Amino acid sequence: MLSLMDPRHHLEVSHIQLERARPAHEAHAPDEVVPVLMVREHPAFLANGAASTSQPVARWQDVGELLSEKQRHELVQLFFHFVQPAFPVLSGAGAEADSDSHSHNECDLSTASLSLSACIYATALPFSIHNDYLNATLTDANGKREQLYSMAVAAILAEANAPTLETLQACLLLLQKGPTVQHQGLTPTYSAFSSMTVTIAKSLGLQYDCTNWSIPLAEKQLRQRLWWATFVMEVWVSIDTPGGRSICSDDYDVPLLRGGDVANVDHRQEMPEHTHFICLVETSHLLSQICSTYYTVRAAKETASDLFKSLEFAKPLRSALNECKQKLKVIMPLDGSGQPGASGSVHLAACVTSIILFRALLRPIQGGTSTGPLLRESQMSAAAAVVTGSINCAREAVELLETMVSMVGPWSEFWHSWSQGNFAIVSTFLFQLMVMLMSSSEDSTKAEVADLIARWKKAIRIGAGSGGWGSSLMSMALSRLDSLLSHAAG
Image 1 (spheres, rainbow, N blue to C red):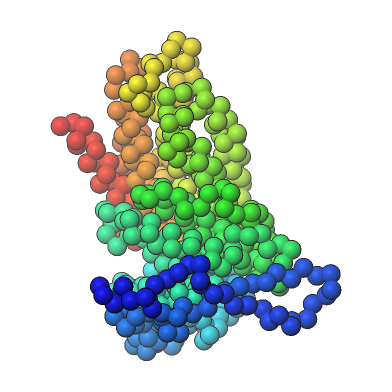
Image 2: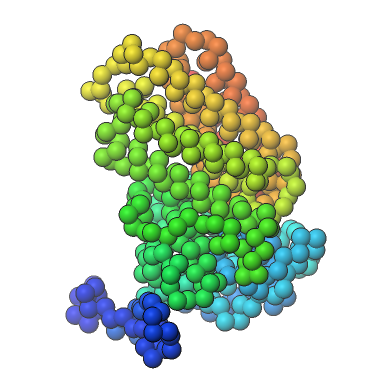
């Protein structure tokens, strides 16, 4: 404790020095606008920016003891085939897809940081079943995955004092790890680490529009993708964990992605799997607008007891959301093809975004505040429309899961870590509808919701019973729903 009070260990934010990332004498046109990119110097109280000796130290030797060179090479190939199309946080310069052979040119990780390399290997390990060599040689994949993530955490903490883009890339992949305990969900640690990731992204200036910067096109595209990847992870992690948002709408001016921003450097924009991330960004952007409209402390007070105001705010959001869903059905239909991407995860995200919107619209109907007025006669028709829309939302989610469990394709894809929480959100929303309609005289409506719950449970049991992604994603949704139903019956 006394060592922490040593004046030499104080971190004075106002005294943090910056250094140029681009030489001042670098040649450029006289009328060219050249941004001065600055990075953190190593703080004086940490020699060379290293972590204190009391923290665990990650070493390349440890990675070599876990995975052979050939195994690491095969895992990189799997990463670029399964993960990169759905979550393109790497440059992709060294990975040319071959959809028939699942092969890729070797991506050179010889200069990559330990944190990023460990995260790439760990993220790709669940897909080792698709590789003959790894199936034959890799043992205790789950144990090795946990060890790789532990190494990545230690390396990230060591790099966090002077972060780079690779540090951010490692943080984003680490957030995709998902919960270790299937029935637990995301812990507050995820929220804290998500906030740290956002801080690193902002310290690297990713929140600024770099369109007119004098940097290579590939670097512009990478910076934009990394910002939106940070945005996506932050908004979805905040839905399933306490702590609130770390990114507000006024905090950035980066434009939404277009096809060319996600394509590889060879500009093969026609590759359909690259659209998955764009669709996810659009859906996440809508979710962020919904959260700021209804779920901040101030917005909740304003809308929780005013049905008409809530519906007025919802008009543009519902219109944009319907348009986004129609685009999803056309661009990335659930056809069971098993093509690389995250179509199942993105379709579920769109359904959950609708559910989160209708949850906010249901608050005035359910008497969100004890002092709020009861529904007047003029509000009854609007309330009935909201209830009908909520049931339609729930039905859409149930039908989506029934479609997915009837095919193999979606379960061989990459699933974002927060998808587990999304399945659980559907479960709790169905229960909310059931409780809300208990006092209703509409027996047909109550029977419809009961039927949806039964169909949802049946589809979850089929998906969870198949093992693999399905089991890890849906076990919590089933346990939460059964627990709530048991409590209501008791």
